[in-house]
Length: 118
Length: 110
Image (tube, rainbow over all chains, first blue to last red; front, side, top):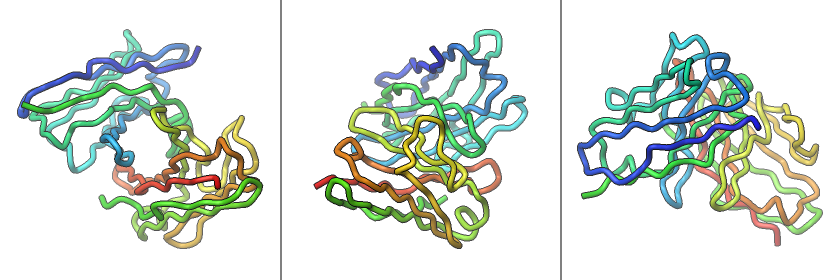
């Protein structure tokens, strides 16, 4: 089955770090643009970051630029999001999504919850 | 990177149509034919309904249609069904490897 499965979420103190993983099945992430999108409880979707199919281009929302880093391991077919200097406002469900169409995400994971709290 | 503006709610009776607007700027919605729409049921991941303004992925009923004029886009759901009750989000490319979502609209089927 074509799918992505996120993991790595949890409770972390403000200022701490966390690395999220997104394991892809039945497709190759190095052939796709991959993204992270987050959603705070009861709130809307917020785009976080992208990495190009070649891996040479990345993009970040202003709210996470300089703190978050997107990367991938082609051998493991896994996408990552390294999150540093975490703040309470980073608390959200983080979704991994495939850019299967130009400018659109056709495959989403179930999400992983990140809670930043002391 | 301001969110695109959507009405908080919209509603219609079964069989009727509902249209959701998505207003951006000349730097995002107006600049690219990149608007996509997502349906999200409570506790579930978003589902792509429309991409590149008017295109439907395989499996999405033709009751869902999209359009764009200037800095605004719209999603119309015709022949409303109970399962259409969900949150809907628009999204647009905003240039420089940046994307922006809409504020979201809760659609109720009366």
